[in-house]
Image (cartoon, rainbow, N blue to C red; front, side, top):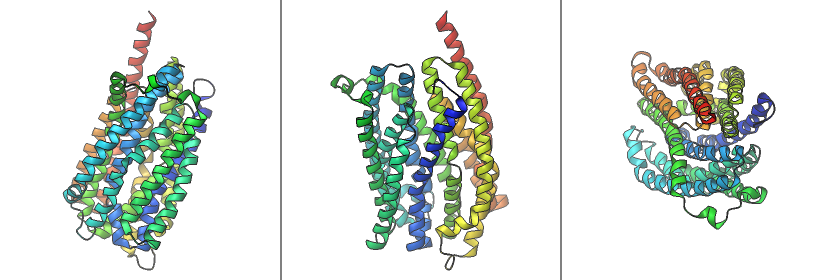
Length: 447
């Protein structure tokens, strides 16, 4: 990432990540499709009603481990392999600690949280059985994302895609097995997800151990370094909180949606799945610029960092326009992928399409959020991503409960875009301030 065309490197790094993100979406999409097709609309609504909580788990894992990988990326760029291995070892320790804490906390709180957001009684027990299993297995998500982030930190964005493809196929097979052969319903698809993620995590670890000798750990590497662990946590936890805050916004919107009944919950859930599928290019570009920025910061190439951000912004805008067009034209056929057209109410399909049509107009500010938020994290800032997430959460919460009073379901559909615009257009200014601060520190160090 420190030499060569920024556009070529960012695209070469982003495209495998994009396909990897699509496969990762298959985890939750397949869960929803299988229960919607083979169990029923209420089961679909039950799994869909936990989307914010699921996003909190996956997002926490992604944010935490992406933060850990920032230090590894910087040490790799500076060619300090001893420090990089030590950071790798402490990242494993930190991931283990956080996995245990989160699993214990949220397995206990899953049902009270579902009641807090007024999940309809006809779906709440299926919803709890699904999300409690997902929380219990959070370690599989954390360690898969850790090893994937480490591979990306050293420039390998292709291998994680291959492991994810393998586990996605396995997840599909296990979903069908635990729903059709062993009819476990919502619990079955959650079990399938945890098993598939666990296999993906193990495969990634074994690949790193075999393919990258620079990550072979010695006894000295494994000796506890509390100062380094705290440094990793200072970057990783704000990243995890950033995603968790975004998830809290999704949960607040879900609470507002729950008041419309289980059919609207089902429609909104499917609409969100389609949106997520259409926007996976944005986090891929975000991860690419984070690695690009981290490595070039370690190498002291500050002007190249600015060039990389300009290039990534153009890529993001073009990707947003394409994604928006695809989303608008594919909303109806994708809706029928999740639901049986012979038994599903036309009103559910109409509300699903309405949601997709609304959010698709605002993919550019959403793409800018991923670009500048993740990019600032790559530059070592945990505060900027976290504060922007708080802003997004606040506006989404206000919109979720205020807009429906005047516009009904249409107001719910617009609550997320309103938050995207505020956060997406404010983050570039934060990036410019951060870069000026880094440049001042660099000039001072050279004197």
